Length: 164
Image (cartoon, rainbow, N blue to C red; front, side):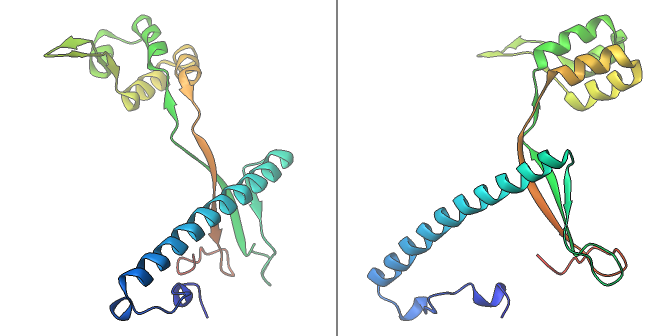
């Protein structure tokens, strides 16, 4: 039985259940979700710790008969951002046109709209201008939350898209 087939652990028929039963089932499901979310968080942290110990960003599962790993666990990062205030130093590096394309000065409507930077364009121009600009760009980066992604593999090194 696959996970998709077994998601209805209580084998309930919502149409045949009373309101009280539905509320009870829902409360139990919420409890399980919270519990398993905590478990997943703990497992992910353990896996990230193993990656850190190995000094890498991936771990490999047992090999299939052809030598391809059965799965690959990859580190992923979500929610990274930049301390855009540090981008002000780009004014000394970017051309006036580049600066104009990526910098949005503070303005006032009915409320003050703070200055802003278009990060994609800042990165593009910083890359173009080289080391000094890239150092500013990279220094401004605020890391996001680390997590993991599991990539299941087939023999021959092909990603198994049908498996979650």
